Length: 254
Image (cartoon, rainbow, N blue to C red):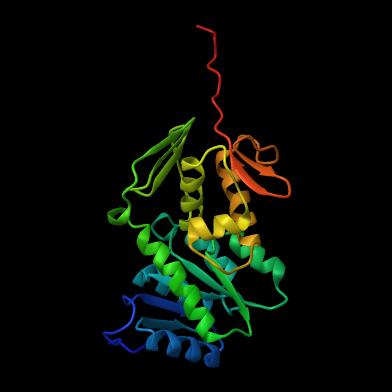
């Protein structure tokens, strides 16, 4: 069932966001909701996957806190459904995972989750992670984007509209993927470590570096002719990643 915590958040603190917490553990859900409410946010809660997915679609929260182990639909199924829905494809998602579920964590990131926190976790750390994702999400809105369009080969990116195209076809990118692609296109030929990408693209000074690896792999799947033999986003072994623009030769046949 969907529940609401604190309809009227305090006026002080960060700009309030509407956050949906989907977790079937009432203790975890209550603690998370309590900390987020005290941080100034409005919180909705759902205790199973089907109600949670329906709430995410109906209420359009600013961010989703999603437990992976849920009755009805699990968290990965919810992620797949949201990322396949154009209206919700860029909804920021922070996953809650069990400590040993590394495979599920990686799959969640591959499906488009923006960050994750492992159980047991510090509620204060979770709030910091959530607000870091919210800051990036708000900064990414068209009104806040001063940068002009970028064209590189058959890639075209418009930060104002938050849209990217390859060979004239629109790419369905998550918030993290869009920011990463925009950064790489604006810095061709420069090698960046995973730590540098985390800090300069997403403003994170902590987190799992495998997050960068996963997003690089997802981008390659969307912009490379052969993701297994990338030409655009290249790995510089022992250092990091580099974007190399490729000028495709025109067919000389008249």
